Length: 606
Image (cartoon, rainbow, N blue to C red):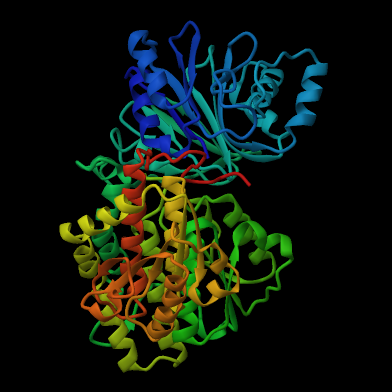
């Protein structure tokens, strides 16, 4: 998870590091720290808690120097306190490291280091790396890091500096690192937004890459020391796109960015004149007999929508797996299987390992990914980029709706290619898909947002919530419950509405708000029957209804109206209402929606 920043050049490193870490705090905010070299020594300053704690101290007592590394931590090994914060230094302070990931064999390594006389200050697995490098150092920092990493088993993005060398050495396996190339200066970070204020020229490091950064350039090798060529890419995001843009929070900004994000996802891929979808995918749709969708968290719920759409439109059996369980159940995979992995960051370790498991079984692989240059994109057979742009808020919003839209296009593509979807049906759905940016923009009109805000305020003190949905909007209920849990810390559960009577109905009383997604669909009548079961037990019914549905509004204590949409595209529109309900519930309760407790944006540890 953690965020890393490095800098070498003419600027004061402190300013670059703090700026970069502020863009990466979504990756972890248990602590933050910097190490800055001034040519004579490396000064380390680190503080538990959010970056503001460190920033305030550095404003009062700046650290001069034009070379530095920084870190914002999501704790895995060791309590989130000052001592366990990164950077970590050797006993003499001459070697300093920051690390993202987990060293799986650190206990054995640490035991050996202790026996050889090394003294440890922290409880972290990361500090082992500093001592291994110290042991291997014979005047060449690059070789010392390379030798040390040869003893390590696990995941890492590691950045190292030494008091005697004006250079930064870094390496990655699993945990992401990207370089920024400037004029007479070099940058390093875990993610692109940290570097955008300084350069758009980026180099994405691959698994197993090492790099040495100097003021005037860089050198990339593999872990065996062989020289590698890595292309410099120009990133078309600007710095402003990674800022709040006048909104109170990143999450709210990203909710309102959804019309544009959806436009970016759909643009150039829908062809009205032929009713065809062009995804620029080289895979043969006729060769697949089954599809496995593999993902975590919000991406998993997008995959559940995808399951429904693909089975309905393309008539291929689909199963959806939680990535963290997939490879441990010894899945049945063949060359006729298409494994679709879904991830905003393209770095989620559970999903990455599941991808590798599917490939071992011979499956063809496709990614539904937002981040270009990410680890998954380099291992997939093909990638369907969602083009949602940078998403900073930990709770996913625009990436989720873009993922669902990508699955809609994928289902249309498969259905047309396999002959299970007629030209007329395809054209109708294509037209509905094209309407999504407008429909979501309409869902964000001030009067609708105010209506949802009032509902959120009314029930903000509830201790529990229940979310229900049917058919293609069953996953919308699950996503709604997840959003509420993530940012308001209210306990929420979700069920397919027909399942309520098989247990969850026991929870219903006059204190329980029950959100029911009941927009226009084939199953609307059955959904309303489930609503009656809630009302009969005294539950507080919050109905999400299509515009104009006054008949069913009589069954609700409160109504949230959303724009009327084709059933197959309605999960995108309905998700916006779920996001706003969670957002305003959390803000009424005074929660930090951008940095919910215990969570991080990109989960790169198992």
